[in-house]
Length: 202
Image 1 (cartoon, rainbow, N blue to C red):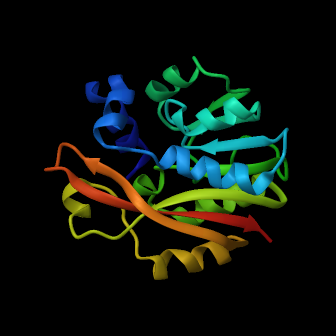
Image 2 (image 1 turned 90 degrees about the vertical axis):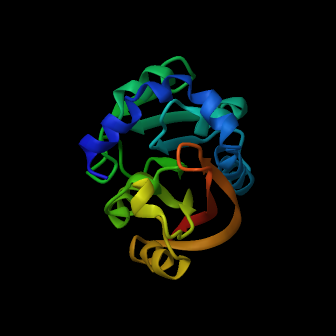
């Protein structure tokens, strides 16, 4: 999706009750991806970068741990919800462009429910790598390939196509798990399965 299309999508009235949508879609990726990061870090204090943070649900477990979280999203409408949460900083920008954060600064980053909307994921992976300390972690959810992606209007991926991009961006795969991602409730409950990756900056 182009940035303008993403803004329009998440400005729709249906997204005003985001928590209800998450419940209807049986969405748990924000918890699973965060746990991968938390278990890998094993730290009481950490700096987290939430790329495509939306209304902030993807960082809920990080807030519980007392981590310092910076959120970035392209949608001002979703950031209005995120402002009610415990983010240290919120930035409105395209995550495929140079990030407005310090380089080599964060212990970990997450991209949860973001890959569906990116036209150039390698650019986003490289930006995440730049922001991470050496040995830092990236947790990312990849929607597994489906035949209806054009009909729905999202990007989905084969693992064999996406995994080489991680290496190109300077990451190695530490762990991956596959699980139910969500149901596209406006498209006859089309199921989207996720593979969540825990990546480490080399």
